[in-house]
Length: 137
Image (cartoon, rainbow, N blue to C red):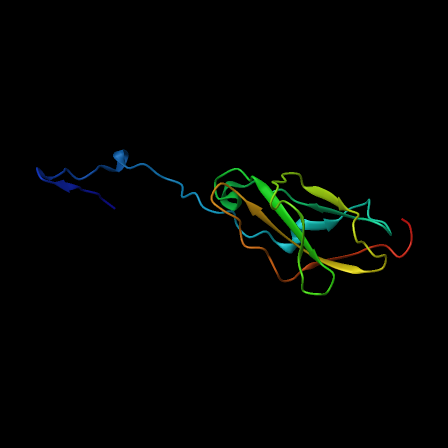
């Protein structure tokens, strides 16, 4: 592709291939996948340890630093509860939930990342299901 410009003095010379610069479009992060969330080793009857993979590739981060992760859970009521990341930024890749955990209950999780441009879409299907242990680990 060749580029020329026009103003009140007329047309410019056609830009040579060596004068064309490449640019990277910066945007919101890519949607995270269910495979990024895992049940952590510290999960027990009274707490759920959740870990996830950091978003690091420029193509996934929107070519901007990740400023926060937002982790949410649902106990089967379709009411998603914020765990971390919104409104207070959270950049770690694990957390332990201790409030309101019922042993033997399955919890659905979803996560999204935010950079300077906005939040990515949350993945909604398939949801990651982590159960609070029936017995101590």
